[in-house]
Image 1: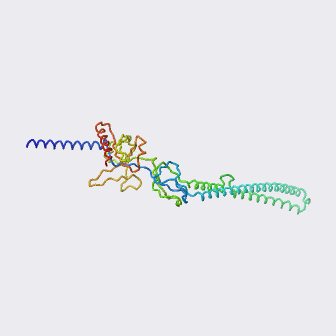
Image 2: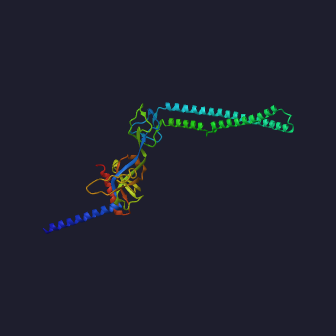
Length: 357
């Protein structure tokens, strides 16, 4: 009987010791080798919306097509936009011709002003001469001769003033005679806009990726600014691991990490921490200001989680991943051989368990 009690006591002590060791390991590992299964692959989802409206005349892709940046995806009916370019070119030519005609008129007005000034000079000399003669001999000239000379002089002055006003009016109406002319600038802008519209009848891939949310066929009327497909970019991919606050105690940028993906069971890849979030969205935070992390709800409050971005050492692995893929991550924040070894064993076991999950 005593032997059974002693055995039970030893077992109880052993269970307590093991429980304490496990608890101690969990506390230490959460600080020095934190891990999480709340890890997903994220990327950019680009909306493919035409810049101009029109009927789709050509479709070069299908659902889940892989495309490269710059590949042609859709073509919108180019005919109306080609006509607009031609019309803009005609308008520019008309403006140029009108400007040339205006320059000719400007030259004529300048010549008219010069002629009026010559006549004024002659009339002034004649009037001065008339005044001198009459001053020397009042009866040398008749009153009619004097009036004609004075009238010619005054008329010449008015002709010069009229010619000046005509020249200034033509200059104002014509404006600058180079590319700064308002009419020329307007015609050039119209031509530039027409060419821009024509260029954007061809919808190309803004990035390498895969076509999703595709529902377009030849004859579909595409409206400017309204998405007709989506492109999941595989050019910009990142891995976000959501760690609890106590996991962040010793975690820092450039810490080594191990990661295993459900999509690639049995493999553990080397990685490192590239950034750690400084805040997350709460009820009092404006939407869109900070990332949102959804914690699992239970009867005990779970600690707040913060996004940590993990980068793979082997860039080729990214080609295997898909947006939304799940992963498990462990980060090695220190040089403890025991804790790091146990953490590596843990992530290795999780990678193998992915075969049957």
